[in-house]
Image (cartoon, rainbow, N blue to C red; front, side, top):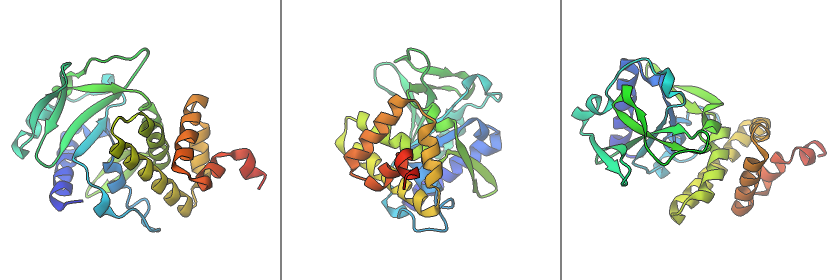
Length: 235
């Protein structure tokens, strides 16, 4: 991770904290891997230098509960962020030479391919499937003098195993798959195998099948054995 990238990310989080909107946001996506380093401080963990991404994704789990009006594009303008519109439907991203910010919300009902307004933040969000899986089980990590909310690593990794199969770009799919396996192995080494199984058992059968398919594609028998509770209990 380049220092200027991480410094810029920290400044964004610091500004969100100072304006009081950080509690409305869950940091998701590849930057979680960077911030999980303290959670895994007692064991060998992913080399931070291997994490290279410009994309920072924030999940707004409950847009209706946002209380403060903070125009995020204006808040970050002096850092060099400009508003760009992705696709012909006008999804807003905040673009910087080092980072791209995007805001996401959980897809509900039949879903929508239109932007979801986040009027209090002065932008809009993309609605995606499976995001409730990330918001239902979270942790807080200390960053300087404030805390950032992240999905629990077990939820994050199992979610990656689902979405990598939906990727159209092979390189991104491979990266998601490898990241998921590495984090699950770190959780096992940390002694959290039971947590992985608990999270896995909490999701619909259709999702479980997607996770299993992802692990089979990754060729990882150790994690598959952990998810098979009957086999695990039977020794």
